[in-house]
Length: 123
Image 1 (tube, rainbow, N blue to C red):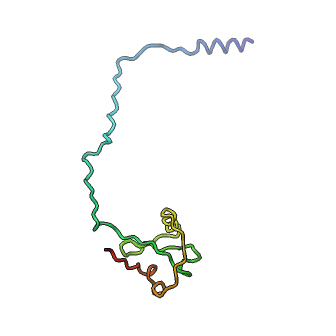
Image 2 (tube, rainbow, N blue to C red):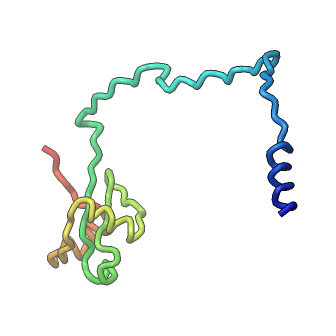
Image 3 (tube, rainbow, N blue to C red):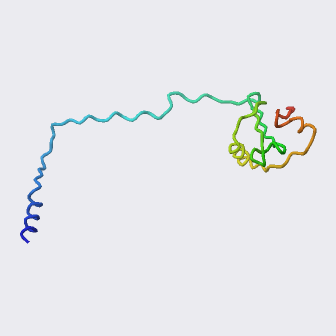
């Protein structure tokens, strides 16, 4: 019991805190936050028909689609994009494309749409 009482007395009187305020210390203020506003207004953008890109997503014929693993060839302005099968499928999903086996034609067997882009006529 003596031990318990001495522990209480020690805990009550052992902590000696003063309420003295140090007024002589000047703490520096932090710098103001940086401005998040742009320094200049954005440039005016007016697209024209000549700046548009020609994008083709052409189905690959069997056996070049490798059992549906590489279902499409993606072309931008006449150059084939080197995309992985996951990226090609993500593009097709985002455009809601359903893969359909292309019809066997002489143009498909000559490579039109998968070795080189289809020729489109813009009028």
